[in-house]
Length: 273
Image 1 (cartoon, one colour):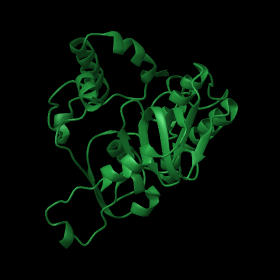
Image 2 (tube, helix red, strand yellow):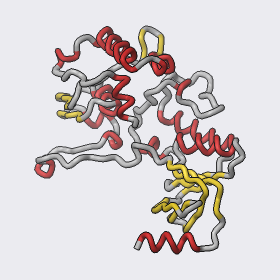
Image 3 (cartoon, one colour):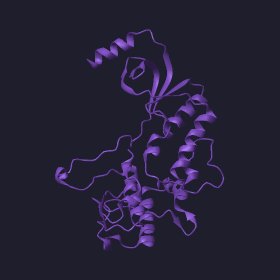
Image 4 (cartoon, one colour):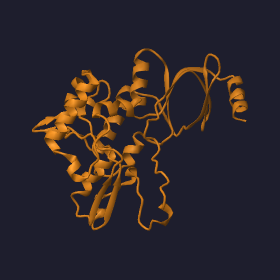
């Protein structure tokens, strides 16, 4: 049924567009900007009704966990006086400013439901009708849909199970016992806020030991060194990160943390491939 639908779409007398970018997040905006600067007419399809919808939905305490100078969109720096790790509202404003300044043609409320290759072009079935394009860039992001696995005993659990995307106000957890599952960025972001509001107890469940780096050492934002770290061999980068973690946080196994299976740089490489 799907193949028949896509075949009928491809046979329709629709103009084949040079390029379509699916998703108007940071990646989608940046790639559309690059394509248009190269003279490629580009359409941007965004299923939400506004930019940065995931940022709008996240908790009020959320800040960008990468340095502003390494996280700005092409040709548009964050305004002077912006904190090193901007608040979510500043990130949202930055994305909207970038779209307006570059007049990027984002079409809101258009969901792409199916894509098929038809020899020399792509056929797209969207919520607003069929589209054809020579090139399609998928920029929907790796965190598009929050996911909670089915744990044994979940149906009998009488407490709340909350995904980090729906963390909400940290004060809502005051006086409660909280288990944080996962020692990634989101897990430690939640722990950071929970630690300051007087919960009854906090636990962290981690399959593997974390690779932790502080945001700053003295007044130096550690993340600004990431371009240099990226040039190092993986083994060297792993060793530098491990030594920094040990120096700043000490031996985490004393707190029940399992040892890390691999170095921080190696884990970043595997997580994003």
